[in-house]
Image (cartoon, rainbow, N blue to C red):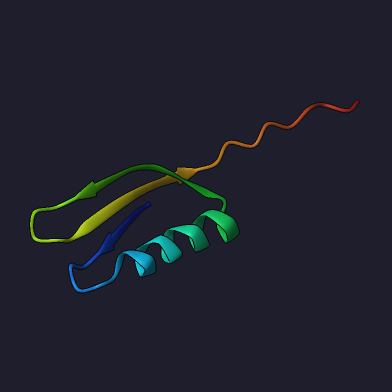
Length: 55
């Protein structure tokens, strides 16, 4: 999933959006990129859940 943040949005708002996706959507931050105009992009990937077999 890719989150795009415009140059007018604050860094605190961008962090809040990434945090919400990671907590409630089970995503984790893979990489981020800051563009010259001030825009940002965050790449999120699904968190891997390891399940042990019980039977």
